Image 1: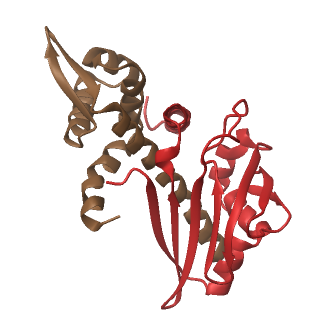
Image 2: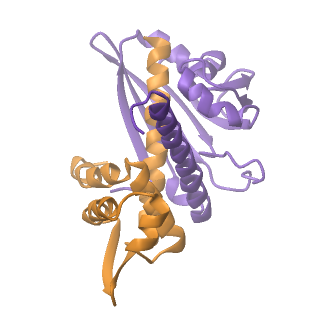
Length: 165
Length: 107
């Protein structure tokens, strides 16, 4: 198994143009990703923004709430209309006290293709092998805390419903 | 990624797709090796429960165990590899969630 790369393929029941705008127009991108982005995406240029809870999912929005206002930063790599959008970033950069600027970035690529009745989107993220081990450990810990929190919420809910005692 | 490599990765993702098992792996990554009893106390599940989780983790190749006196002691199988796999599974889950949001946005 490669530890360096993630690949996701998703079939979307939406025209290619709509998907293209959702990933390449910063205001659209921001709406589902959960970020408020300053200015357009331009190949070779930085784009900055701030984390804001997503408008696509109320549950996720609650989880993102603690990170509201955290800086978000990418360097746009390629922007090929209707076909490909790629950028470099620092994945899971959620520690406000850490300077990520000197650390290696991963490369995220969105590739579009026609599919019957919609669009096939392939997302890859590569370069994880370059991420410092201590940063990986922190991400695992932070996320584990999130899961523990979720488990407690579910537990509380079940108790409130009288489903467990 | 080749299909065969992906198939090999399935047990790892399944093993990590549970908060108790992820907590065990996270603890062993930072403080391992540890005896069963310590892991049981930390996770708050029964001894039987924790043993079941540990067996699953062992089958996935993420942890291994050895008998030391009366205790069975657990350690991460090649710490760096396990950490890299856990990290990748986490990043992968993040993309799954983001892409579901993209789906509800465009469909």
